[in-house]
Image 1: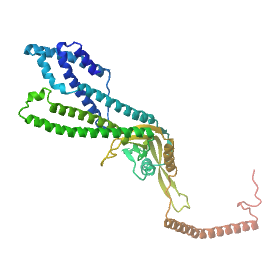
Image 2: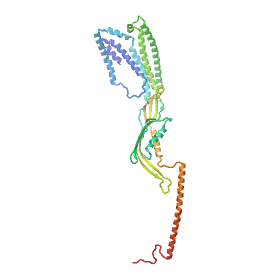
Image 3: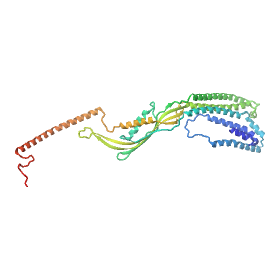
Image 4: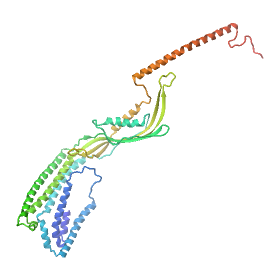
Amino acid sequence: MAYLFVAFVTLAGFVGDMGTVIFPLYSVILSIYVIVLWWRAGRAIARHPERQVESMGGGDLVMVIAVFIVLPVMVGLMLGSVSQVGNVGIQQWQQWISVLDGLYPLTYLLVSLLFAAVASVGIYQLLRRRLALANPVSEVSELRENWQESVHPNEIFINLDNLVMANRRYKEVPNRVYRELDPQLVEQVEGKGGFKGEMIQEIQPKVKPMNLGTGFDKVRMALLIGGNILVLIATGLTLWLAFATVDLYEALAQQGVSVEALLSGDSSALSLAVNLLVWGVIFRAFAALLRGAAHLVFSEMQFESVMIYFKCEGTFTESKMSTGTGIHDSTRSENTLIRSSITPWIVVSRLVTSTFAATGMRNLEFPRYVMEMHKAPEALASIRADVVTFLKDRESIASITSERDLGNASQIYQLNQQTRAQVSLPTAGADEDAAGYLRQEQAADDAEGKPSNGGTAGDEPVL
């Protein structure tokens, strides 16, 4: 399009007689610009994360069109002014421009357009099949509840980090920790306080196969082979350029050849060297483009993993509880009971990520791009079940678990029983003596005719 604009402006007479001078020069400049653009397009992929998307909007397109329309007119006016001031005719300008007669900018542009069309068709097929596999969703499974349990807050985080998350490792490889679990316990007055903590962990990713079909494999293999063939052609042209450069040097070394003759365009050695250089750059640029596209799809690897975000806040209170305080208990247990109000927020998502591998020591040490986020209700339910099971199985009362301690406590209990038995024997004898004395007193009173309550026989109440 830019080439057509330049041809229209310069050859239609908008810049006067200088159009025939400007068009060859502008054509060469445009050809070099197009070749440089395709050379830059064939660069290897950047493996650092991009923060913005490069785009060419309407403003950029208008700028390109304006430059290729206005600039030839301005250059023509400038050259016309120089011709008037310096008394330089159009023939002199054409003689100077004749240096470019050995170049073929239109051929360069047509060949570049052909290579660009072939590369675009192949890359389009790869993109179409790859995008058909994509499923860009963003879903998570979350849990928000409130638990009332008799457990110390720190034990919740310890169990979660050392047991619950450690049991979910993939092939015994530690989980990836993106936010370290750092619980904060804020103690207040009278055994009350609050706590909070959060963490982000990812279970070690595992490779996910990519089924793109046989057509995808054939296209990327064709691009790779085509790029390598162009590399071989560019290498041959470079070797040819080396020999042409030697011939050019020998031509310069001859006494009969002057610099003016070389620059006049009649020298086949200079023309051949310049054309070999241009063609070598063109083949090398599109070879890099085809190989880069093939390497991009060959190097992509997908992984599947589970990302877990855990946040917990709550309050706790302390109270004391004692057991074994009966009169006949030989052992006693005093415990400080902590009652916690726990409000967890758990977010779990199954991630599908992609990275681009490379050769060498840092083959997989590159950023992974999150392509999909799916719900993981099974993983969330499993985590909740493990945490709740731990909370329900907690012991609040200290007990004796050692066999030797149980034997010692049993001996103490037997000793206490024997002590109570020995103390109760004399007490029982004294009670029996007292009961016999009372019976004797009762019998004596009955024999004398006295009432048992100590009153006088025959006494009547006096009115």
